[in-house]
Image 1 (tube, rainbow, N blue to C red):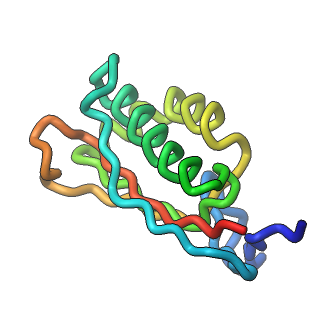
Image 2: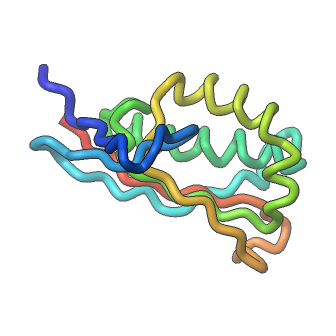
Length: 130
């Protein structure tokens, strides 16, 4: 089977850390995953919410017949960039557990609020499935 995604990291942009500069989607089905939050997490702090939100994204991808490495694009919305930066070591462990070494094209955006007033993170994604 041909890989549905081809990573594009032009040397002129420097080596990315924790994301890919671009991905080419080979033939496949496109799955758009709605923003997922993690307020139902057992551990409801920022790291716990990130963990649960990412898990929920993967539940949708898996239900559609996909895998983590087929996620082509992801946007992470956080209510505090400082919390994100302070939690990077723990977030790396969460990422590796769910996504392994796969890094899609990504954006991280600080927002003033999310629809659920208890939410501190929301993750949306696009996957290319065979």
